[in-house]
Image (cartoon, helix red, strand yellow):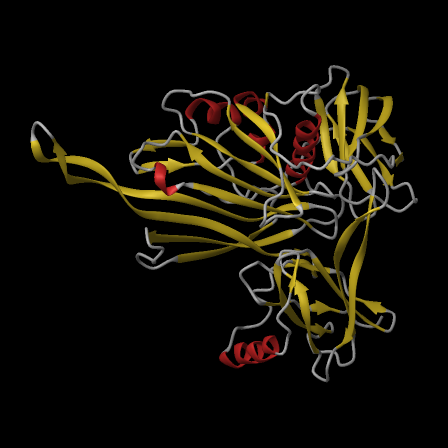
Length: 486
């Protein structure tokens, strides 16, 4: 079901609008969504701003357009209508407004809203709009050099007790890509649903970005605000479920989870509805995790589908009138788990993201060293998540370890109220130095949190590397490369 990643492409239009977007403090706005629409309100082009706040969009025809900038956690910044002539390059500098969106605490499940519109419940409408921003950003390429994405895809068959059946398979891939997986077009998905049968058996589908952003998805589902859970105390959700029963069409229901303070999208979890009664008890479904890189761009970082495996078997059936007799029935034998994880994002020689899983060859000696280092870390917790150990090596251009390099590790700390409608937070920061072989390690890193690492040697500095340690792992590794002296 999960398809190969799609490659980005662009049209060769002659009219161009470009410029730089800046924040209220005059710093550059990275990772903002710039949307240009025509006079009828149709979107003509959209793009992400690069790290320097730069954007460039090619327009399909001369004419009058409007421009708005979407930044997660803030109300849109609107630019007055402007005209572009044939072949013209229009330059527009954009100063973003400091107008944050602040949600009232969602203490109980919100009122359901079918068909999200401008006049929908405020919490539901705001959450849906913020989720759409992040989902749209996963489809766009930020200004600047292309990013290369490496990912692994796996297939496992398990029985109902969770034991492996057969040998799991894993495949690795790498490409310049903007989509992690694709489903049917939204209109087709609305007609045939998220599961259908063909000559090979049942085919299950997950909603991709196009589906989640589509009008058919919004029209066929009801939405409601979901409060934080014990496991996700700092998240808030927008739940969705089918607006009506559509016969035998398999649909989905689930929750899009966002960070309660920043409104950044974290995860989509869903399960299939309207499956046959034989499959209902296994709660088939899936998850899709989203992540924002230090450059401001977004990606789908992990995904998994859980699909029931069944067969037709003769089973005893008892009735009071006929007694025992055998009849064919679908019997669930287990689940097929199909998923993937982005392992690295590179831009040229720069590592923008690492999962921490492939920094070194996992030799017995290295695993023993990691276990020894991890054992020296105190057992503690942060936000209900166990802390982990992060280790790595600082290299020079010749891939030799650098002794005494300065390593800085940062992550977003706790939010605090700064008034009725605003919040503040501080970045947690740890500074250390590499040993004689260029290695370093640090205890007390929170799991499932975006962590940034960079190294400096004198005036030379590495590009920042982003890492997120999964909940199920106690340690991770990340290397940084310091450019050679000029």
